[in-house]
Length: 321
View 1 (cartoon, rainbow, N blue to C red):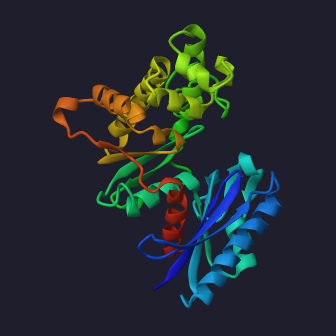
View 2 (cartoon, one colour):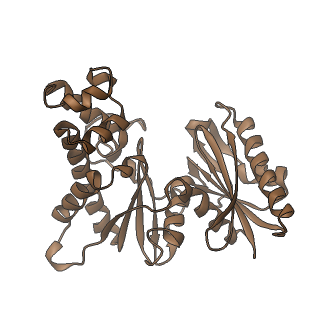
View 3 (cartoon, one colour):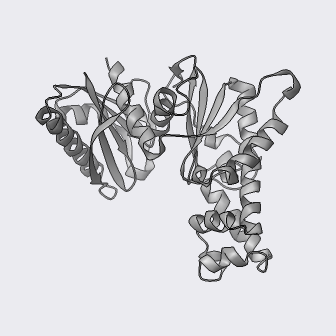
């Protein structure tokens, strides 16, 4: 049995796993992400890889085939260089070369959302499909595209940044510098902003929601919105419905372009289940072009949770040159 190592490089933690060909994580290792220290992050990644390599050797599993890294940023077409990753202060970072030099193993780098999409395609919600779009609804919107069993990376390795498709010309200012990006209307940040604005206007109706914080709309957190909606708070539920409509509308746009069999919805906001997915499905069906004359793609929750990127990166490493 050949094993690979997958590493998910996050803003707060670096999580690694020893993964078999069936996507099973046999061992884990973790380090805290050094605060905005690019050299420190590389060192921490190498430590994780070395620890997992030692576990593999001690367990009699044999040599590690390769390492896959999932990084939140723009990765070049060779899957070796991180072109830009603002959260970890990387620009033109030769990450594959650095980690390979430190670990002695072949290394590939992939955008973390692409890696998660591949993990869901191979071992999660999309394992029985040939084409899917994975959408990660967290602080922003990320995702990945698999068509006819191939991960779509684009000519320069930077495809599927669809959180920054403009949905509202001259709309809300986005962190990317543009206005009206999809993630400004259908993300975790958008959900929280919507809930706070509604609570400020309708405090009596938002009694449950406001009870979770300090009694003010500003004290509400994303977790509070989900908990209040689960308890029937009408304002929190309306916030989810509004975000779901934006999300479903965006899925319809992608269906017109890509025609996948399935949309896999992951990320922290998706943990609310049908509070998000029910209005998303409804809006998707309503907005889908020629709905009466085409099959309806499934809209399903992701299955692998936080392990999707790790497992996907490990599997992609099996194709290292």
